[in-house]
Amino acid sequence: MTEPHHLKFQRRPSPVLPEHRPLYKIAQLALILSQASRGSKSSLARLHLFNWAFKSADRGERLSQAVRAKSLNVTAWGFDPALAIALRYGAAEGLVSAGRSGYQLTDAGHIFAQAVADDPEVLRAEKALLAEIGKGITEKMVDAVAKGWEL
Image (cartoon, rainbow, N blue to C red):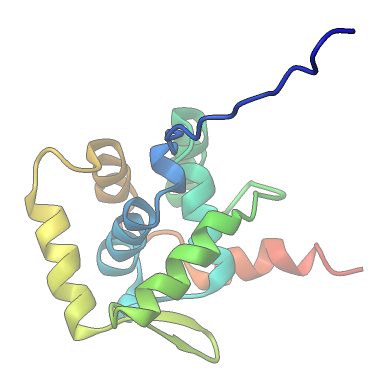
C-alpha cells in the first residue's frame, strides 16, 4: 500500500493591476473632479463615464468628439466596482464628500488633486485627456444618455 500524498500550499503575493488599486482610482477621481467638473462636483454616472474613457485611447477620443460636437454619442459605458471602492476610501480619507447629486472634492481633496496634477510622472494619459476635454462633458449630456437606460 502506498502512502497518501500530502499537498503543501505556499501563499505568494499576487500582483494587483494598477487600475484596481484604490489610491490609483482616488487620484483619477481627484483629477476628474478638479479639472473636468464644474464646482468640483460630479454625478456617479459621470464619474463612471470618465473612468470608462480612461481605459482606452479610443474611448477617450469618443469623449473628445463629444465635447467638440456638444453631444455625447455613447449609448452606454461600464460601471466599475473598483471606482465605488475608491469613492468610499476617498470619502473616508476626507478627500471627497457624497451628496444627493453625486460627489464633491473637499479642501483636502483639492490639495491632493493639485499634488497629483503637479507630478509629471503620475497619470500622464489621464491628465492629457482631461486637459483636452476640460469641463466640456456636462451633467446634462450624461443625463440625456442615462434617460434612455430606464425601462
